[in-house]
Image: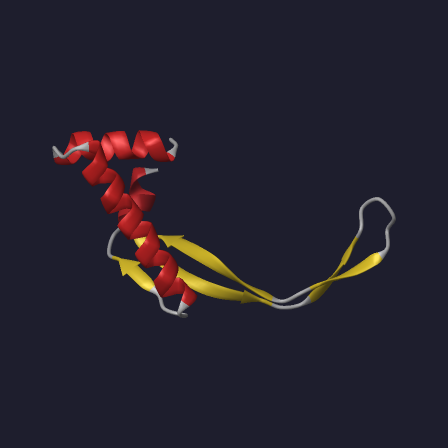
Length: 89
């Protein structure tokens, strides 16, 4: 399912227009992004939780030459599915 299909499904389920569903989805993704950027965590009971994880710097290899390269440390978004979501899979 892509973003347009998700917006269509949200509009149909909630009985709202596609524009309102798009605004709601954009608001959700924007708030999740800004909360994670600030180092916060979002927990939606039954659905799952979004958090930030830090990856340490490490050495990697260039697959073409075999040369060692440095991979910088970075922060990544992490999602852990909740019990209700896992039960639907």
